[in-house]
Image 1 (cartoon, rainbow, N blue to C red):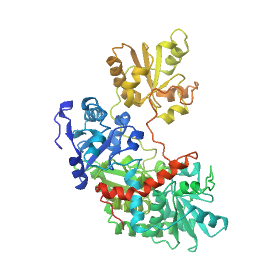
Image 2 (image 1 turned 135 degrees about the vertical axis):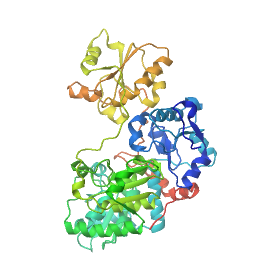
Image 3 (image 1 turned 180 degrees about the vertical axis):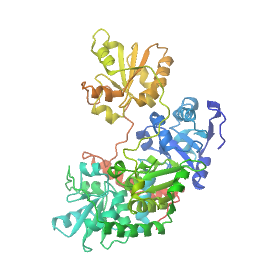
Image 4 (image 1 turned 90 degrees about the vertical axis):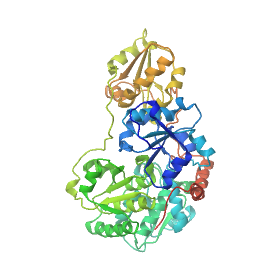
Length: 550
């Protein structure tokens, strides 16, 4: 089941079943259970700890999300095509080509998991969302309805509303008077946002999870204020026919040294109660070898602080979002997680929740501000980008503008759908890399194809797949990659086409959350809440989570 292949060829790919994966989860052994479908089909139905790892992004995500090359990887898909032609098999072969040595395919896909009696979940970030419901069920986290909160606002009561989501989500829509304070920032900053103990604090998010975790964080930390969650968040507010603000920019500000010190004491106490472990910078450096254990290194501060200076090899993962979306950055269940910050608050509070989610989690204790000396954004480690035939933007512009040869050039854009609609080369066709074979049967036949994506990197990795799809059709054509991708075209000041103008693949690379945006159907929002209410019962049937609460 977990044998290590000696050479990277398809015959060495192992197969596994429901019992093998379930036992690994029950034993808390490391396993990267990867659902290689695009995000939308993943959200329709998947096992609890099957992390979404789309086939179209394998090379872009593999080294950063799977840092240990001999971790046990199990690839999963729908199970609706013969195994040799399946996405799970293709992903397994790609991972082995990238140097991963312990790769298995889940035989029969999601359908076989269900047939074996496995529980299936819908939506995204399900481990985190189900954990939030688990917390509320056990701690009876206090909450107020939308009507009750609206009354407090109208009466100008002594109340502070803090929005625990990312700032961009808050800016899109927010509760009137609310201040943006993402989850991991709450314990650090609440004493100055609500300095009077008599002030009531209300925590909201879009739905339930982040408001439950945020509220319980403040309660666990022992702040003197009375704290409640806004029941059902902005969804509940909308369903109660209340009006949301749009475009608000109220944000937390810096806090004093004394506030930070007091918050650090509270956070350390919570982390100690949760069994969070302590590590030194020297230990963390040794763990970077990724031998024997998978180790993730996360910086829980806000992104601006990270860019100004961070520790080597740490990734920016603001604590509130890390708790909300853990499997998106740490798909190896059973791995070790190391957290760092500069204040002793955000890492400890985040770690306290990860520990209750059954992660082995450490906080660095001996780091100083001077250690955060690497400036700039986090960069994912990538495999060697292949050298392939390429052209520059001037050449493709000439091809597309010349009437005699315009029809001879087909531009294939591999961007995410959201990026494609924001702007693409005129006449470029949207194609999901994972849908190449199907897309090539529906694209016009031409003697020349040009691949592009936002920066040109994915297009280089996709070159062979495109060429193979053409060979499968017995079609001889030239294939090129646009050097620098669509950004090179944009930087040259050339016109872009906007909107979903030439969709060859279905836009399934992202699942539209029922709580996103301001135009969701009431039925979808209510259905989402009803689903969340049922998660604790689903956890019980699944039985592999190991969650607990303080």
